[in-house]
View 1 (cartoon, helix red, strand yellow):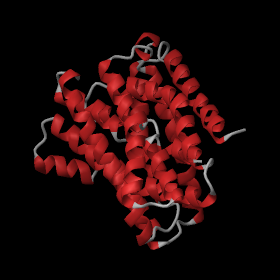
View 2 (cartoon, one colour):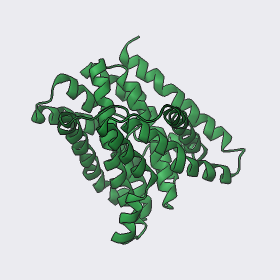
View 3 (tube, helix red, strand yellow):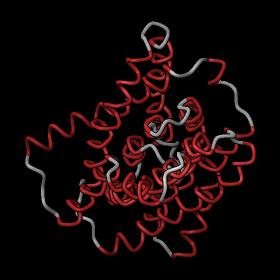
View 4 (tube, rainbow, N blue to C red):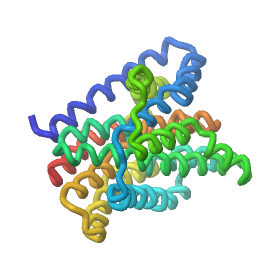
Length: 301
């Protein structure tokens, strides 16, 4: 089976879990999903982000190439999506909830995609994720805190005390120093991390209806165009400007082509933003990536 087909099939379970969440959402009270969001925010996603960032020692040469490239790509997502404010929600906080989907990425799927690459490229994908997660969360928390009307002091505190930021930064430090996490703790974190994506997708599904899921409009279409088409195209140009190797190019192109992060809905809900906006974009992005990711894989593998 080709790498492209493998990724398309790998996305199918995510779609099914979202559909299951839509079904369960009809039978369980909203308090269950609020509690699940809190578990994702404080436990499951921090475990996933720590393990991703701590996956391997990070060298200066990797930071200078892969790290800078993914930071530039996330910055482009941040800037390209800003004009969508004119057709977005009236509330600044609600727009911040959907705005973050333009630069965030599905870290779990990144490691599925990495399996289609040579071993060296797969290792570099772990570096890309480890270096991208802290910046992704600084931008997201900053936007949400500003949307919530927080001043610089509380907004800065919200960033540096955010569980996503703390976990990814700690993992990055562990990866940079090359120290191994004790075996029992590592196993526990791995098991918690495995729960993160399915739990978030269930919660996303519970907040959706089939009508909303299928309703693409100018706002959601704009975010999908940026995340799934424009950023991968920009990645090719960036690789040429930075004179990256073919292996490094494949990593940043596929990183840029990832659908948005399931954690975006969890973070938006935590700040009081309308969770339905990011939840809709996440679900649609995951489904559309079934068609777009195989194309990008075929172009770089």
